Amino acid sequence: MPYQSEVIANIINRLNIQYFLPAIQREFVWHQEQIIRLFDSVMRGYPVSSFLFWELKPENRENWDIYRFVDNFKEGGTRNEPAHVDGVQQLILVLDGQQRFTSLLIGLKGSYTMKKKYMRHNSTNAWSIQRLYLDLLKNPKTPDIDAEEGIHYGFQFFADTPLNTKDHYWLKVGRILDFSNENKFREFKYNERENLPGDVTKNQIAVFEQNLDRLYWAIWKDAVISYYIETDQDYDRVLDIFVRANEGGTPLSKSDLLLSMATSKWKNLNARDEIYSFVDRLNNELPRKNKLNKDFIMKACLVLSDLPIPYKVSTFNNQNLELIEKNWVDIKEAIETGVQLVNIFGIDRDTLTSANALTPILYYLYKHPGKAPMELTPSDVRNAQLIRTWLTSALLNNAFGGQSDQALTETRRILKDNENHGDFPVDALNAEISKMHRNTNFDEATIDNFLEISYGKQQTFLALSLLYDDNNWGTLHFQQDHIFPKSLFSEKRMNEEGINPYLQDRYINSMNSIGNLQLLLPIEHKDKLAKDFDEWIVTRDESFKVRHLIPLDESLYRFDRFDKFIEAREALIRERLKSLFIRIQEKGGD
Image (cartoon, rainbow, N blue to C red; front, top):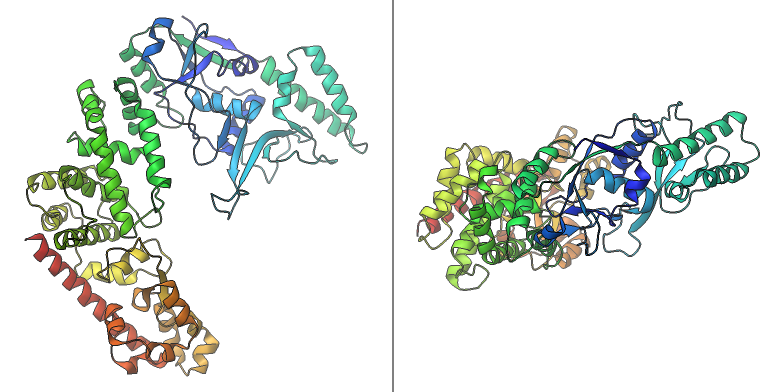
């Protein structure tokens, strides 16, 4: 069958009525800027690439999960809703073109909801429902310094109808769909022209008419949608077509492919709904918030099911997909247990710098379902300490950064070899990771890097938490505190304190370093702020100072000896890290 052409208005009016999406499609991911660029291309007569449809025969409808196009999108992700297609004549599924069709649908019939800057996600006023408008007085031949590069027409999203002035006349783009009859359009154009401010120029009126005419022709007259309809009902052929068609545009990730194939092959569960709802639970329904995604879950499915870890089409055969479905309940349990465990350590969306580093822990829990690292028996506490220290070190050393498939493959092998070991096999894991020129231990070089971590960085909490024996960082809120407060480090204050000018730069460079940071409970932090430092520090007993690795030599508490204090505390930190890993090796060898 040859390619066919159609106007945008006719296609848009068929979306969610005759045209739907197969479950193998990814979610809508375009930003407002991409939507505006698409409309600008349509207005300029540029090709918007071809589309690929699949006509699904009535006898095969029960074999497919079918979804609606999103028309009202919310930033951060909006799930496609299942479609009810009983009675639909000539049911068409879109294999290539979802992002473009959804963008056209949002711009012409729907909305795009954005979060307002600096507002919390759960605030009732945090979200702004916006619709697409076109400035009919914007001359597409005149560059706009405020517009995105390469954009000629004045498209913009607004929450409320923008005010018209002598320089701007805004039309909600979707209104153009009201005029299938050309005579009605001419009448509308005449009425709108009469509404223009009296002081507009003839040139502006000409631009107004040209823009409005161009919009009408782009939506109702120009057959810019070129599409091919596949009618073959063979699943493997259609899937191969889908993968090839989605190699352009927003790339089809390998996890998209795996999820798509699982959705079509799982017999008793809807993989798409299962994965997405589980991601939502991990991120939003646990005591602490996380920022995980379907890619992490799909990769974990491969690792935990002892399947090849690199994404290859050959891995996604029926046998392996059935195995993942069979294991899914246990996989979910291991993942949720692992995420809750690291949340207890205080590692969450703000501090989990590499989700891949979490995966070996998930594999360990999957292979040891009877283990309960969150319990309080001595062996559980010991095992939790092993896991916490190993994960924190792996994150600080970026041991699973970059191309991590090899690291995941080799660490899984070590975990399988030590399956009967009992506790988390830290020593064996560290030895294997070091062979890949990665590090989860602390030698002199990595300790030097550790001491360079500064206040306010994503890794700072992780680094500080490693200096304490506590496991339950997730149950209480701790604040990063400057031992010598920042207020001391102004030039005026340092001069008043008699700090030699040549030392002041050194003081400032050390102010935000790990050597001057500790973790305090809010009540401790508040009490500290209420007193001068030299007055407050002497009220702390020796156990407090030992816990926070504060030198016991009280002469170092004077601000004029701050540089010596840092040297002494960094020495204690070095001892702490070295002794910590000696203890870990001893426990790991039990």
